[in-house]
Image 1 (cartoon, rainbow over the protein chains, first blue to last red):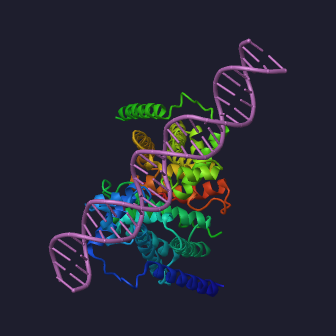
Image 2 (image 1 turned 60 degrees about the vertical axis):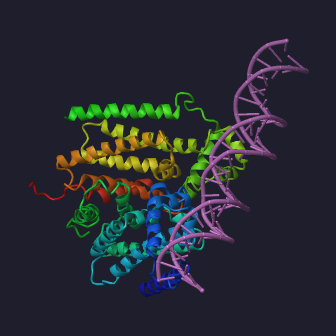
Image 3 (image 1 turned 120 degrees about the horizontal axis):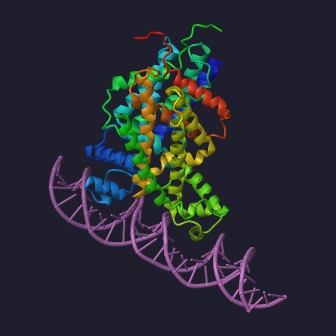
Length: 227
Length: 227
DNA sequence: ATTAAGAGTACGAACATTTGTTCGGCAAAT
DNA sequence: ATTTGCCGAACAAATGTTCGTACTCTTAAT
């Protein structure tokens, strides 16, 4: 049963990645982005975060870059390409991260959840603007990328959920509804980009400690009863 | 000092409400909405939730209602009026709720936070579509309503924060960063509208219990040390 | 009973903007 | 001489909204 689920997981994940890599055409332009193009993506992410994807026009983007609208198309194929890059880059970060977490088999479920919380904080602090767009604007992608993205998201959530269920089965976690636990953790970590990160001067380490304490010490069994 | 802050809070809240009531013109049409208009708001909220405010056109809305676009303007003044109604209605619910929580002075900070979590769940389950729009699309309002909304939001968060700080000062809560606690709770409760509510058949009571357990037992001191 | 008034609801046509994008050309660098 | 980056002009489509009209009810005066 466990073997079957694992195989199914691998297969599905592989199919997702094939679709994803074809969609993004990573093999064509591996990682050689001209500085100008990188700047466009960066400014676009900022605008998408501030005003939303649909409310940000290519003319807004051009103006923010000191360019004319038509000049953008010398660097990028279209508006949606920017959104796709942002969304799939972040998705890749999360999937790589959870793969690493799964790859430490001796670790307890509690340590794995702790590592995942740390992962979310790291991704958020790496590029918080990009993560916001990833979180809030992915639905504006068109098919087939939208389906590919949804599949990757479902995959990540299912793997996270499995770790939680293992923790419950092992008695490390309270026997609460696993979905409630999953989505509470996922969204508890989302607030990082809602309060503007400029003002709040909390060290990443302090933030991580507080978050882990807040979430885990409600999750871990501290009572000594064995019933 | 406490008195001063209270007076300032009242004053500011009053100013917010004046602006808010003028902006919404509640006194003109108190609560007499024709059924057709109510249906328009309902369908619009659903579309705004699904596609986002900017990506939803008035033609989309008309088609979903079986109407021609121009017919909409027999009932509503414009697209933004719908967004404003949704946002300020929910804001009013939250502000009324936190006022009630503040009005029970004998209650402990823990009981107050528990009541606020319950409030968020209640508002979410009352009309989850509307709450999603309130949470995600408010920024598309134009001035001066945008500023009024931001002020109300800040007001709510500050009052929530004060309860948390009181709990910490009384030793009921762990001395973590109050902002971390606040935004973790606020966003932990947000997940309700991200997992589609149709499939997940969790009773509201079970949901509330699990959420409170998860959040509070990480927040409450359970150690017996008095240091 | 007939008429008039008025509110509520819906429509077609059209409007001025804004949207994402394309194309041909121009200048500088390689 | 080819690539690279940028531009002006333009396009087709979509946008929110307005206007004049017309149909259907209810209500009230004739």
